[in-house]
Image (cartoon, rainbow, N blue to C red; front, side, top):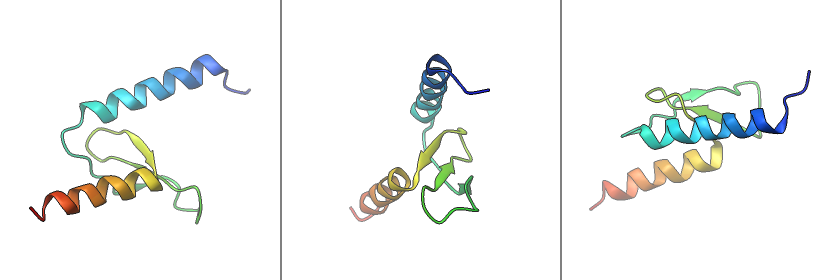
Length: 68
């Protein structure tokens, strides 16, 4: 049974709320270990999920902030 648009929208809102509530993400949980492309990661602190590009830029920001 396919998920309808309202359910998808609700899932997106819930994920965004999880991500906003977290004080420091740890995207160490690879939830798509079987894929080489289209990777997704879960934060071990808040349970929010991001794609590999969001993970990369978040971690790059942490790296840059530690340089100052």
